Amino acid sequence: MPEQFILEIAIYLITGTFVGFAAGLLGIGGGLIIVPVLTTVFAYFLGSSDIVHLAIGTSLATILITSLSSVRAHHQHRAVHWHAVRLLSLGVLAGAFIGGWVSQYFDSATLSKIFGILELLIAINMLLSIKPNPSRQLPGLAGNTVAGLIIGKLSSLVGIGGGTLTTPYLVWNNISMHQAIATSTAVSLPVALAGSIGFILAGLQAHDLPAYTTGYIYWPAFFGIIVASIFTAPIGARLAHKLPVQLLKRAFGVFLLLLAGKMLFF
Image (cartoon, rainbow, N blue to C red; front, side, top):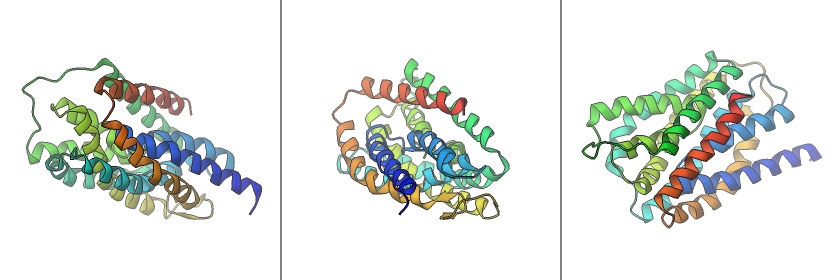
């Protein structure tokens, strides 16, 4: 095996270690780390003009596995709001597929900017700790389907799994931060599934892709990341139930700010 490929796999393993921990701790699905890291790594190792598409598609595929591990850990703490998951799922599935499919009509620079702007707005919201109306509650099926459609489409388009949008949405509707984080990991599952399918189909006609890809999913990165992340996601999930809410919100916001800056100047 060439030394360059060994180095590439080592980077994916290290990324997966941090991704799994962050996914469990913050309910973010891991895309916040994966997409910025993979765009940098792919620019160095892969000769393709579609590195952002590959990073996003691969991110969504890994989130599907990482979220399973995180959801199991959160469910053991009885923190997942399964009623909210059911209300959001239909819209999330449809929106995530649409987001993955339409990605083929955006160039890498545009996708990178969309990712950065979205993360910046969410970070500001989380750091300002905007308080919802005390009487606000989750809307019914119709309202949550619309919300899920928006969450799914935007999350899939930028490969973030849904936690970065679902968590503040649930908190805004007076679901506790810990429960919102746990529930977001469950919502990330349909986002990742439908989004991955969309990115596979969107990339089937692309001509500038490296070996070991299916559509816009690059399998060496996928396997390297999930091998490490499935072990660290439960650790992050357990820690999430021991840390104070305000600390979690600040960590969440600062994390988004840093990675938003990276993608805005891609």
